[in-house]
Length: 326
Image 1 (spheres, rainbow, N blue to C red):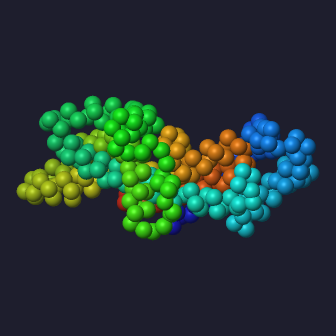
Image 2: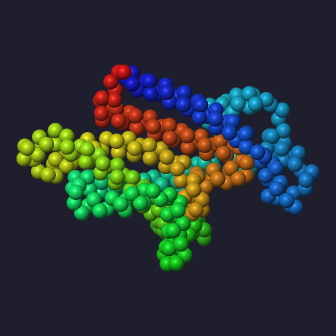
Image 3: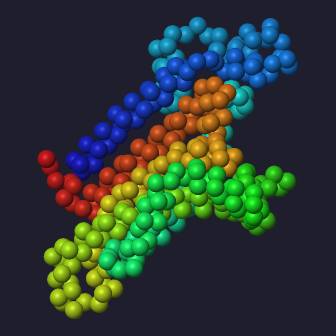
């Protein structure tokens, strides 16, 4: 109980610091949304309309930075993320709610697949160390060192441009109306296959290497030797003794990976023009949309913090030694 309370207090403080940084960073960026909008709409908006736009966006208020900070916290405590400047007067919460399921669905599924496959393959390679299975390690090391956005560009060039098997961008056929029909779901899967495959290939290597190294370490432990001496089947020793203990760091890393599902795909979504939270954040930054930037950053930050907290609690439940008082 004391362990959980200490961790909760730490994460509450971290969340406050993250929200504070989230407030100040957009305001330190050069330019403002009205200037950016005037630049994009040059020739189509009268220059005399600049003051009117500032009034419309609420940027003409003579408020000190501290007053703005207090007002921002008041809005957050009431669940209000403000109105988007770019999509005015659409609430930021609505835009984030529309983009978030696309990222969670694509990257979440890809992360789970990579974790399961990587852990299974790593278990087999680690248990059969010194055999032909070790020849797979250089390949996994290579893919773990290649950035996933680079793999994405290669995948687009090969499978979308040269072979024409998959579309190069988008999240579904724009000629279709979003619905729960099998046709629309099939289009979403078809458009998401290439970016999902990119994520799986680039991340599965890390799971394989991590699990393999832990299996090699655990295999030399006394309790594994005793299990062999008892005459237990090899499958029971691998699953019930070696893999059961070797997977502990993997579980912690998996919880963290789920936290980064929301914010760790900005470049990938830019490469594939996928309408997730990362692509929405990129558009908000390019248009100086402060409320939308803050909303995206807030969701990403909180998801990572919650994932860290879950990882701490899960690891403490699996390994009681981490709960010991210092």
